[in-house]
Amino acid sequence: MRKYAEKVQDTDVKTLGSNVLAIIKDVNFWRDLDILCELLEPIDEQLKMSESSKGHLGQVLQRWIEMLKHLKCKEVDIPELTEFVKADGIFAKRFKRQVVPIHILAYYLRPDNVNVPMTAEHEIICFKFLEKFLPNTQDLHTAWAEFQQFRGQIEPFIKSRPCWIFGDKPHLFWVNMKDHAPVLGKIAIRIFETSTNSVASEHSFSIQNHLHCKLRASLLSNTVNKLTYTYINGRLLRKIELLKTDKKEESLKSLTDEEEVELENILLVNDGVEGDLIVVDENVDGLIELDEEVDENSAIQAAGMGDDGEV
Image (cartoon, rainbow, N blue to C red; front, side, top):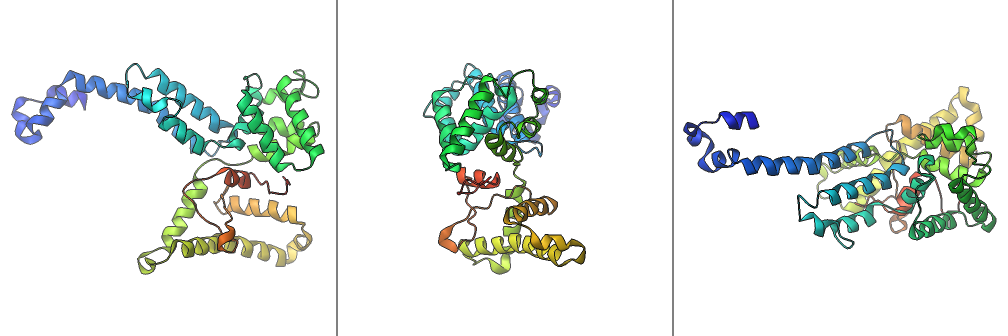
C-alpha cells in the first residue's frame, strides 16, 4: 500500500478523491499507522496463542500479564492508553472478568514459574480455591503443604529430582509427581489436561445456528438452550449406550461413575467437542445455560472438578 501511495499521481484525484490522496501522501499518516501496527501485532499474537490446541490453563494469566506490559510500554507513543490501563480502567475490568481463580492457581503450578514471587492476594485466591474444592480439612492441609513444598522446591520437589526436566511441560511434571504429591498432583493433572481454546464454544454456536434457523426464528433463548443441551449430550449418551451393548465391550456395563466420566471425556474429544464448558442452570430443570461469559464454575467444571471436591 505504501509503495502504491508513492506512485500515485495528482491525476488520480478523480479516481481516489482529493481527501484520500491527501491522506495517503501524508507522512504522518504512515507514521501513525506504524505505531498502531506495533501496538496491535503483539496482542494479535497473544490471541492466536489462546486459540492453540496446545494451550493450557496455566498460560491464561501469563498472556494477560504480557499484554499489560506491552500496553504500558506503548503509553509514550499513545497517551490514550494511560486511561485504558490504569487500576480501575477498562483493561482491569476485563481482566477481572476473564481471569478466574483456577487460572491463577494454574499459573503458580507451572514448574517454570516456581521462582515467580506470589502476591498475598494471589496466595489467598489459591488457598480459597483449594478450600472450596477440597472440603475435607485433612486433604486441604495436605494440598496446601504440597503446594508450599513445590514452591519452595523442598522434599519431595528438590531440584535434583528428574521431574524438573519437564520444566516447560507442566502436565508431564505433575504426572511424574502424582505419587509423591497425591492430593495436589491429582488437581494439577486435571487442570493441565483442560483445553483452553474456543473450539467448544464455537461448536455450541454452530449447533445453536443449526437449531435457531429461519424456520425456528421465534424460539425463546431458554428453548434453544434446552435443545442445544439435548443435541450435544444426546449424541454422547447414545454412543455410550452403543458401546455398552456391543458384545465386544461387555466390560463397559460394569463401569463405575468415575470411569463413565472418563469415557465421556474421551468421546467428547473424538466427537470434536473437547473441553465443552457446560454450565448447569438449576432454573431450567438442570439443563445447560449458554452465557456470554464463562465464570469460575464453568472453568472448574471443564477441569472435571465437582462441588463435592472429587477430581
